[in-house]
Amino acid sequence: MTERFFRGASVVEAAGLDGHCELAELNPVVTAIAGIHMHVSKVEHWYLYIWRTGVRILLVEDNVLLGDALSEHLSSMGWDVTWAKEYKLATEALSRASFDIICLDRGLPDGDGLDILRRGLHQCPTIILSALDQLSDRLEAKNLGAADYLTKPFRLEDLTHRIELLLLNSNGDNKTTRH
Image (cartoon, rainbow, N blue to C red; front, side, top):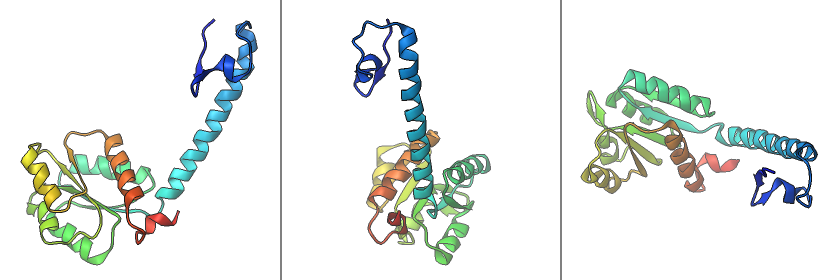
């Protein structure tokens, strides 16, 4: 008989069965466990959505295709995204509003994204998004105060995970800790 594993125990063990049962006997057990998992998944999704609500992200990316995809993805996660396509627009956005996270491209048409770090314009964790993949590029960004560095191309899930980690580790003054 094929057993499916459930948190370190097989379905048979989780159900308290002795292992000498027919597959038909397992169907209600598998259905019940799947139902519990489905319920927990919906609760987790709801909690994560509520936790993400109100988080403001400044996305600084000049590539329209990439910026559109990133903006759409981050918005679908429940985050409020402001997208700046140029260095000047990014600095204007930072002077008008506060953000919880900055996702910052380096190669902008009117300047180096790292100048935002150099000039101390960031007041929140910053993730550098760059095609520059040398160790010296990463170290320069870290030395200027970047919280993280993602080399393009990257998976959307990787960016999401890194943002969530930064939000969890953010200081008590950050509004994201209210949830």
